Amino acid sequence: MSPRFSLIVLSYQSGAYLERCIEALLAQTTDDIEILLADNASTDGAPEAVVAKFPQVRLIQNGGNLGFAAGNNAAVRFAKGEWLGFINPDVFVHAHWLSEMAQAIQDYPHTHIFTSLQLDPQDQGVLDGAGDGMSFFGFPFRMGYRAARPAHIPVSEVFSPCGAAFLIKRSLFEALGGFYERFFMYCEDADLGYRARLRRERTLLIPQARVDHIGSATLGARSDFALFHGYRNRLWLFVKNTPAPVLWLMLVPHLLFSLSGALKDVLKGRGPVVGRALREAIGGLGAVMRDRHQLQSTRLLRSTDLLSQFSWDLRLILRRGLDLRSPK
Image 1 (tube, one colour):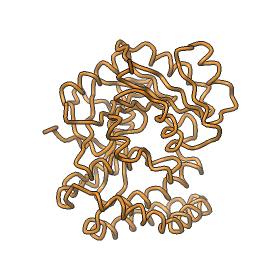
Image 2 (cartoon, helix red, strand yellow):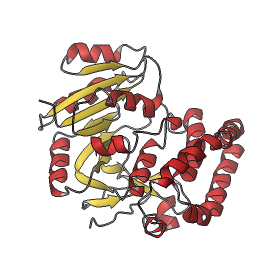
Image 3 (cartoon, one colour):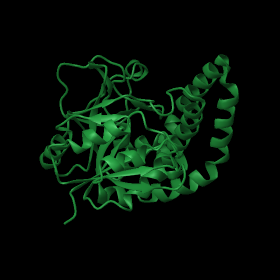
Image 4 (cartoon, one colour):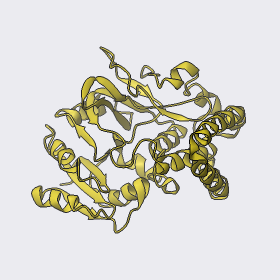
């Protein structure tokens, strides 16, 4: 009999945290699960050591560094569950994380994406994230990042899940075509949630489904790698997913905020990275536009309905505040 939940951890040189991540998944109070450890050709020996210690974990060798998108997509082909859980290797789920997610699935049967409340491992009073928002100028942002944890957070609709720890129904994931592999890394979660919205799907934040997230443990928050993929992928995300009437409305603010951020990074001496990212972003627009045409031809959500789902409060966006909507 197939498990209900397939929990996928994608690793790449994640030895410092991987064993603890897997231990937390094995300690879940819900036992109808399988755990898949997909590895992007790590050389630290951590995946093999984890599977030797926990033989119930299935190791999938991707054979190269495929990045987040393709690496996870490859793992899904081996998954048997009705629901897919994607968990970063520097995430430690709390004991009742999956049981809270299972309860949410029961309580909200017409919702097919659920995201976690992310906490600072060193201080449970500080948020690491509460789902992702989408600004009115087309930049995704992690809501609640480094904010004080409120005394009460209700179950809420958010624009998209945070890729650190979320669940999605397998049938929806496959209908969406999985993660967008042109990204390689960064923005895949916002892109997946955006594409789901265009199909009239939503994402719910389940505040009782808690995880500790170290964050940037593998790559570094503002490394050249992160900076490059952030600039490139944000432009592709915006162009590919945003319907034409909304795209033209948001284009000027999107370009202004992009150029403002680029100028700040150039003044910090990071001009070569920014320049390379923008050149590749523009050079790849032909392929992205072809993907856009296919995506927009199957869109179900009206442009006017999409506008109401963006965050419009600039102060909230800049401080990465919580834009939580009541589930209907």
